[in-house]
Length: 390
Image 1 (cartoon, one colour):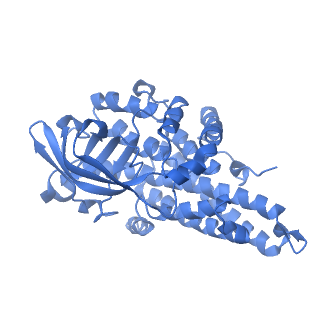
Image 2 (image 1 turned 120 degrees about the vertical axis):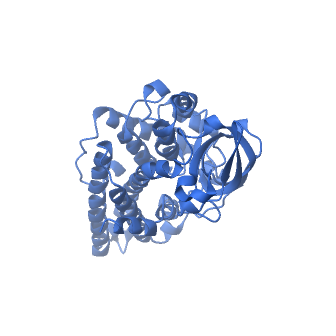
Image 3 (image 1 turned 60 degrees about the vertical axis):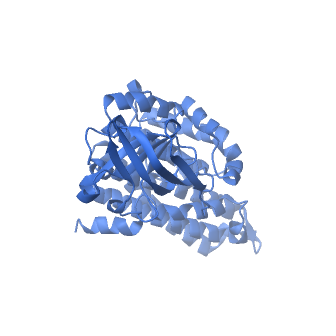
């Protein structure tokens, strides 16, 4: 009988795992197993998930689970988003970009938009009619968000947006994009504003390449270009210009916690697969698991993964209590993604030559893990943020 990723670590269920959160976890796993996993190889080859999959996810309540019901969501909390993100890892379909849509894009609108904006955009994000993306990184500015060049110039009752973005998750599918812009280039961070663009309603917007990445092949990650794109001033996120950097700093801890949740989901999946593999694989007349080196390696990985799981559960609890600090979120992102890459490497090694074959899931997981240490702020940036607390 196959080892389940959710059972590979001996950690008690956290207090925030209520009955309704547990039910959503089960439903998310079933949906992803039945509706996404059978098509995932095709999604990898075409380097994009079908739009129909997004609409099915919306129909099944897997989009905007933490958005209040009055705005079309399920009325849950971040705990619901956490189990969806981990289910993506447990099933092994981590190129399906709903976690970013749910727990990164939608919260910007929920927490910073006007009532009119919430009513306009959130129900359509919850249904899958709108697929969300957030455009931060530029060819010349990654983790340094103060260095962005994309501009938004006010012209009567419109803004005119010019610039380019890159490495944008969901970039080919997205038709609602939150764009980080400069409304006052002379004001530094205080000159940053977030603009919401519905791509189907504007001229001058172009999608560049669907970028050819090492891993996460199923996710459409793109360049975006804005050439005199005109949007109504009503599409400024928030009540006034210049709040963009504050909005970003408010939401980034949840983004980093989300990455940690994704990491622990993939760690548990890798351990479950590898334990099953070494139990069945024979070498020198006995199972690979019977060798002391295999036992010691897996004992080490399980111990570190257990500590990581306890810490992630603690961070989710802190976040639900609105007590998660930037420092702690940075620790979670850095520690979990470093461990994720270590686990994938060691588990691939325990698969031997088969681990290097793309037909084995561990090969894809090894490739997919690497970017976790980069996006959401590189792990080097995380260490800088942590160091400020010393």
